[in-house]
Length: 72
Image 1: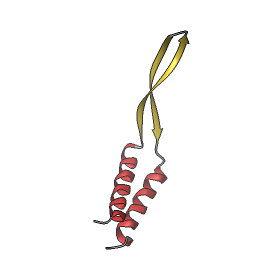
Image 2: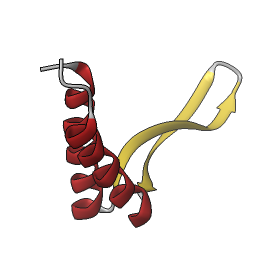
Image 3: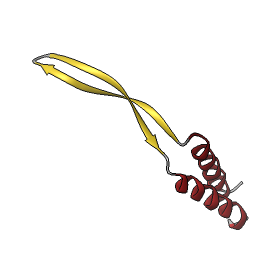
Image 4: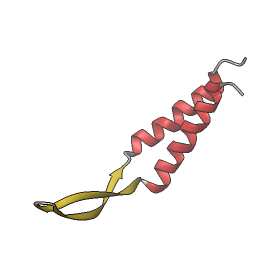
């Protein structure tokens, strides 16, 4: 399997996950208060929304790479 087809499969999978879940979240640690050597850290959950058009474009581009990619 050549790299272009592999990239196409990855784009299709990522686009499908973007359509199903619509985004992802991750934990982020920030410093809320710093007094001398003492620090108060807060862990927050950040959310990143994946636009619908970006997910659909990933699927379309991935399918195009699979169909029209160089067959070596």
